[in-house]
Amino acid sequence: MRRYIREIDQWKSHLENTRKAILKFASNKRKNKVAILGSGWLLDVPLNELSETFKEVWLFDIKHPSPVYRKAEKLGNVRLVETDVSGFAVPVFGLVKNSKKSGSKLDVNSLSPKFDFNLEGFDVVVSCNILNQLDIILIDYLKKECKISASDESQLRRLIQETHMNLLPKNKSCLISDVEEQWVDSDGQIQQQKSLVYTDKLSANMKESWIWHFDNYFTYNTKYKTWFNVICIDC
Image (tube, rainbow, N blue to C red; front, side, top):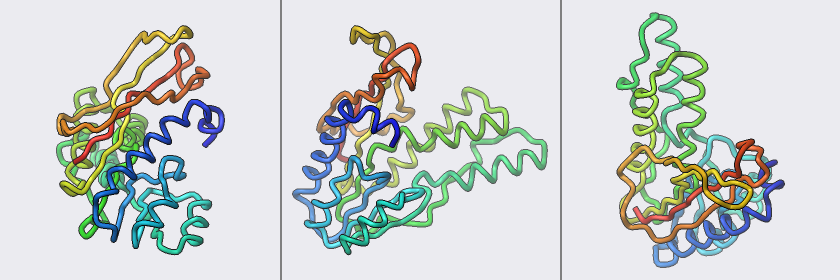
């Protein structure tokens, strides 16, 4: 939220593009239940419009801010679910705990996701700008607590992203995600780029793409502005 407040003018187009993409995808679907995975602060979620057109709106995230609870209560047909959308928080914690206890090397191949929710029965499921975020905290935790090789890191990132892709119901899901980070100089020239995707399971059915001016004040990267290439695909 602090970054959003600082970058509000630069974020407007990205947030509006996301909201429009969600509504466009949902326009020709049944209007019983819609699920938003990674609802966050609802900056990029057209909650009022979804509440008006769907019988039930379900918001999934690890923690819902208190303003979201107030909005949900006011609208009446919004359900809040607090859960680990990645499915790997508990398994990764257990892996680290066991590794420390036994003194054994981390075995990322032993990891399998654990979900306490399912997406059956939803007419529309939206993965809302979270694909590239699901692994970040988990990888940072592993690096802090244990030694993890570069190959294991890439493998785990791929596993988390592919698990998320497989979680989305076919022909009912829309995925919006940043897929490339761009380092941009003061003149607006791209100096470096890196992929944020570790899976080849992204559908070729891309509907839209745009640039998210994520940080123009050199607070995320002190040498460059940081922009993201964002895509919207039907799954």
